[in-house]
Length: 451
Image (cartoon, rainbow, N blue to C red; front, top):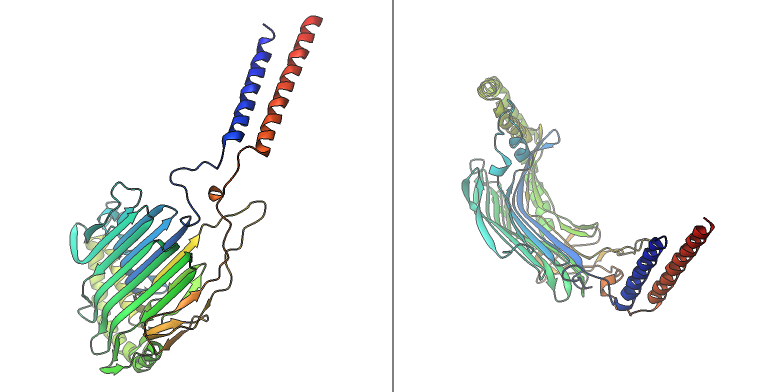
């Protein structure tokens, strides 16, 4: 009976050794879960496009609200797309917080605008469409569509019908954002575009035919392409030529300065592997003439304003949120802060998976990015200094030459061979286990004879 434990040890050793040997002789490649990644599909691509954002700011506190956001991206074979009609930002967070009296929030998160989402892992990842809603009330001017499948492919579209804000002081028509990512002609591809029919401040400013585009590729082709274009521009009733969009916007700034209105001209830049084509920002900046007028008006109505706010707070402490928002909005256009409308804006990236060898460090995946000379008519190219230059010839064409080095191949895609050194290691391990087991058995037998 004394030898039974050692017989079990010997049997276990044999089992482990045999399993090791069989595994070494039969394994041809690493095991994978689901559909294996390849050098072509392994990687990521994403795109983001925003139609416009209204952004009042006072004392560095922003209450910006974004409209028409489209997002699309994939990693390996998993693709996702999302469309957001309205993003309330900090206003949404404040409204969804617990009431000041411990009661329900002013507007619960579930009743705020919800994104439309598609995922290639869902049972029905196809195209979906629905109008935007707030607190169950339909907003007919915003529609959303998303699609995602395992090709991989993802696409999001968000459309906004014509709107007029602040009693018609600002008009925006025909906003459409689109984001697409997937595999195209052997390359990871991400594309984001925004088209804006028109933007206007009646009697002051008219813009039409605005277009933003960003596209990133990696794989068979490595490139980044960004464009921005204006169809027409009119300032104070005067039409300005837009063959050179930069010069047109600079000339517009000179005409708008006395009114306290300013353009922040878009630039294109690559940061952390992401290509950005910035929005065209229309800002309300300090103006002595305007601020003296609005300041006098606010001073005259200040007593009545305070009485109104006190009455609202006594009625319901939850009205404090609306009072804060109104104060920021008023302050943003009266010199106490700033007010801006950000039109368009896109960004894209497409990269292989960043692999690492823990013994050898992280492989280099990039080098300096420079823009080559391109040409486009009525559009703008971006050079390596992130400045805009317009050239008076045909279609939009501006390519960022990205000479990124290729990362190492995925282990799952490398061909291996059976047996070899692994088989020898398994065999030596088996022999060693058997020798230790036999040694233990002999020592125990010797101890039993002595006793």
